[in-house]
Amino acid sequence: MQDEFEIYKVDSDHIDDGLFDQIVKVESDGNEDGYSVETLKDIWMESKNDNFVCIIHGNVIGHISFNPFSKRRNGSVYCINLVVSPNYRRKGVALKLIKAGCEYYLNRKCTLPISLSVDKDNFPAIMLYQKIGFEIKEPMNDIEIDDTQYIMESSFNCVYQIICQSEKKRIKDNL
Ligand SMILES: CC(C)(COP(=O)(O)OP(=O)(O)OC[C@H]1O[C@@H](n2cnc3c(N)ncnc32)[C@H](O)[C@@H]1OP(=O)(O)O)[C@@H](O)C(=O)NCCC(=O)NCCS
Image (cartoon, rainbow, N blue to C red):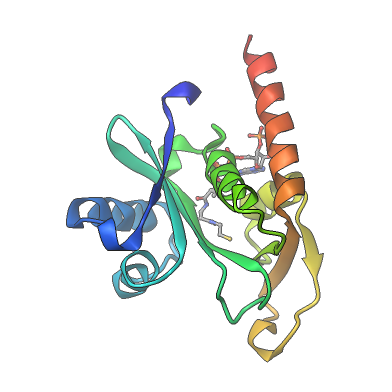
């Protein structure tokens, strides 16, 4: 099953309506507090974000965006909009999406930290981020101050190494 997942980088100026509709569906199925269609358009079609989708049998089942220019966590690559369709969770899809981003930035010799914010009550996401080496940080500026969220940060190299180890373990466990 795992081998059938494919990750693609989607450039904002090449995204077509069919692909965008699938991204909207993943968002609405997978995240009850998810972004509106307008915000998704900003993220996916009108920005300089680096966006990735996970596809299986021609359908998008997960996505993630990386923003190197965010006002939040300025000086880092800020990770947003990670969602995996409910039917495909706990199969390593989020790890594959984050790994693809790590590979992309490490190949470009990026030395910026990777950061994100997560709702304090989002247990699955916090478990995921802690597993791959993210640590809770203090807010750096007013935009980041939000009592409902943690700011988390790590390095691409650290996250990448931990995901590779985790994937090896998953393969071994499935043998
Ligand atoms: C958070 C989310 C993206 C995780 O996606 P996923 O593809 O299921 O995650 P993975 O399968 O790659 O999980 C990797 C590891 O994260 C941890 N993890 C993920 N979901 C977990 C859960 N529900 N409970 C506990 N640990 C969890 C586990 O350690 C897991 O490894 P394991 O399955 O070998 O134990 C998914 O639950 C989701 O889309 N949630 C709604 C949107 C959201 O909250 N996004 C994050 C916004 S900050």
